[in-house]
Image 1 (cartoon, rainbow, N blue to C red):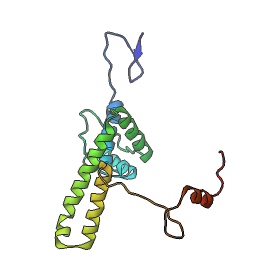
Image 2: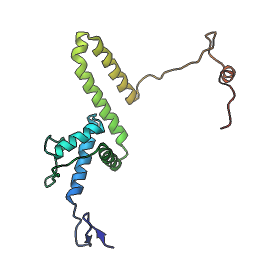
Image 3: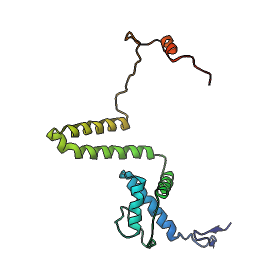
Length: 174
């Protein structure tokens, strides 16, 4: 069975696949989008950055492959950045959750490290932000203490199941 090249021409078993410049550009956009998203940028900001890189007005985070050029009026939308991000993430192995957890933990450590001068000086805002960063790190890593919630009646004692059902009313079968 003959297959088509990326440019639409036919190839056979003796002819290798030729990857077009557009495909190389698309893979670079995916890599740049993922890297900028990991840094915490919005898709609007990512689209602006990639557009500036394509026009030669900014430096890329991920090196542009040799031979890849951009049109002089190159633009990319936030929707296209989102689509390329989704494609890149879908191509990644399913272990990404653990990798994202590690990434978030590293981000938390960087944030806490940057808050250290303010914490040492006793700046209340820095201390408050540091506590929030530590709480977030504990939650994403699963070592935060479980929270207990208890409903109480008017007398301050825990509600019984009968009292709870009376309070919420009849339950439909839907």
